[in-house]
Image (cartoon, rainbow, N blue to C red; front, side):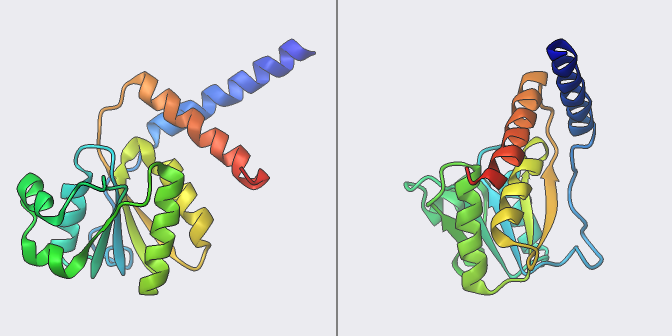
Length: 180
């Protein structure tokens, strides 16, 4: 009986993993009702995320952008040096969030920022393989009153990265309702 249960759990995990790996999200819509949001949130941690967010902001897809999970030593001028972000754009429209250290605290930091600005919609920019868990955490703290539009930065993750992220995602889906 236990062997069958273990085999069933492994089969469900494997099928879910295949779905997770095949259904990685791409860039979000650039036009239509979800093309425009009140704000953009970029979760740090992977290549291409900040350039994608700043390109969307410069194209007018939102009024303001939060970069969540920034090292406390990073200054606005570093964005100009590293990514070529115009200083005027930083001054008017980009907030550096340095209160978070992981995906859960990115969501908390974002929720506070969304609340301060009274936004009703945000575009979440993160790497494709990280989107499911990041979006889950964000929707969990924001509730259903704020629309979260996923905008995945394409990557070429290896098997181990996908397997680890899928397992983290499943564990959060199980532990969050239990209060962990």
